[in-house]
Image 1 (cartoon, helix red, strand yellow):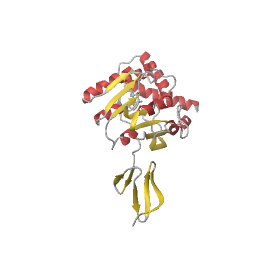
Image 2 (cartoon, rainbow, N blue to C red; image 1 turned 45 degrees about the horizontal axis):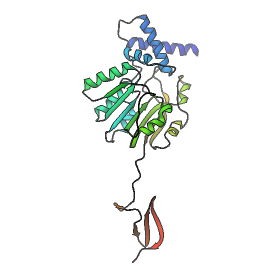
Image 3 (tube, helix red, strand yellow; image 1 turned 60 degrees about the horizontal axis):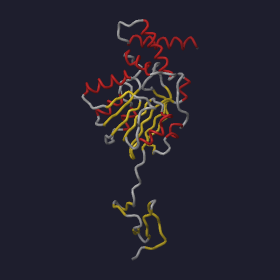
Image 4 (cartoon, rainbow, N blue to C red; image 1 turned 90 degrees about the vertical axis):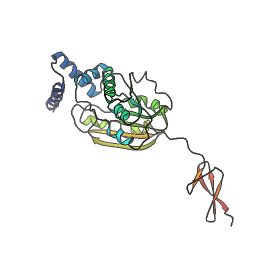
Length: 274
């Protein structure tokens, strides 16, 4: 079994080498393979490891926008969006092309460089900066959309929830711990992702085996996906047959009298006047 896994890894690394621009030195190959192993296992990966892979032209990272994100914004009015850990900018560029005012950050400067170049080529506006999760100022009620795909959501969830504007959404995709059955990586236990955003309204949640956005071995892994909205302020008053009714006002329903309270309509013991 160990021999078979080692063979699979060599095949994956060989695939990476084939994607590298030539000529490429043996040292560069070894550096790329080491970076690939760290990144793929999410084990002590540093910005320089990602820079090596971004520079190599590796197909480990897809250039297509995240499918959950595409679905989540399909019928949503564009606003201010934040792409956390934006990498080469696949999600940020998709949003910018669809009318969003996008800011993204990443600690790997090569990813930011490539994202800016692609934004210039596409003639779209994109604010991209080199920063870390610890240093970036998320702000308070600043964003209509925050994107977290394969990022340290556990560490920054409270800041993300605080940074969303009322009515804004967070889009999250990451690996379930059960992925470790097929590859040594994974983040969330059962329903753990939901618990991080308990103050938000869940629009969509999935726990499925599927192909992740980036992978060394190109296999199906157990993924968790969440779209959740920060509830807007509760509107005062009630609605009756399409018209607004102020709090404290009453309406008749047949012979029953209904009164609009702070939490909505309430039946009363009073009778409607004839």
